[in-house]
Image (cartoon, rainbow, N blue to C red):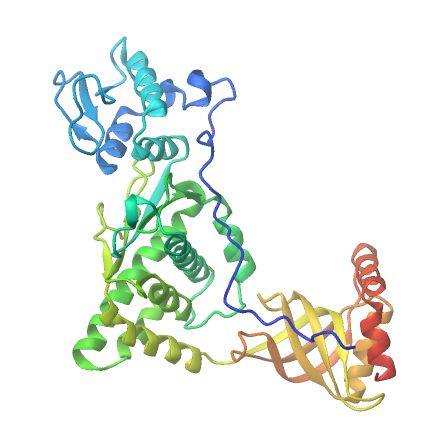
Length: 420
């Protein structure tokens, strides 16, 4: 029985977002005070104050020029019933470090979900991305299971679209750059207490700033293109928006976020410790979408998919599967791409002579080089007009690895050679 020739991508991809840790990660020494909390000597009071304000904490006065008092978001609690932080205005006072240590400890013990978010951003200076969906309030305040999955899935898609746009501008990326784009999401953290209506992600500014900057430009360009289409009926704005990072992957992600809701939005805040990136406002405006935007987004996605051109390539790859109808004639070959294209695998049809060369190359543990056109149909996984198929010499280590692959998959090639 033949095994499938290719593994078709179904739109899903593994989650690359790590859950919120028990203790906030970061470059703090293992012996840091307060049970692993950030070292108070390395915390900037101005950054702490900015993060508290961002997360809804309220400044309740204090000694002007010395310290400020902060209380958590929500209705005022009875005396002695809520956390109250004293944050020094500068580190120039003798008790500044002690006050910061007490504030960090109080945050760690606070029941307010926002307290953990503040600690995460202190431990790893991060840009924050917040998604929300306007949906009916769940019963008894509990988060809907399917609603939470829906929100998480859409958020992952939006982050992936931004990471793909960092790798290159295209109306449709397909399988191109996907592995590297997913790898960039490995350091992203999910905020505390995720639910079905709101979700926050922390993107480390040191490594993820290109992603958040690209998402900022791409989301606003998407909003402007949708407004233009709804006002004029024209799709031209979506063409020019590609340079800002808009693509089919992003339009599909926004559709997923909005679908089934009364509206949805994305807000972005820069890491105070890292400052504002060039070309971006200090406080970016949130971007909101409504169900009325969905037709324009669907048309744009279809347009991107239809218009993305094929790419001429010269690929070096290892033969991993072969199949043809009989012992002679043309056949289908699947290559694991080693160089020449940012996709993991390609499938191509070869004439009888080229098919024979590919089979012999695999039997002796050699990859092949082939020229052709990488077609957008199917997600850039198919090579057409294949020609110039030749074996390629590799070092002994790579050759041994390819031979091991042959031994593990020898049944594919027995089938291919016998035509069964």
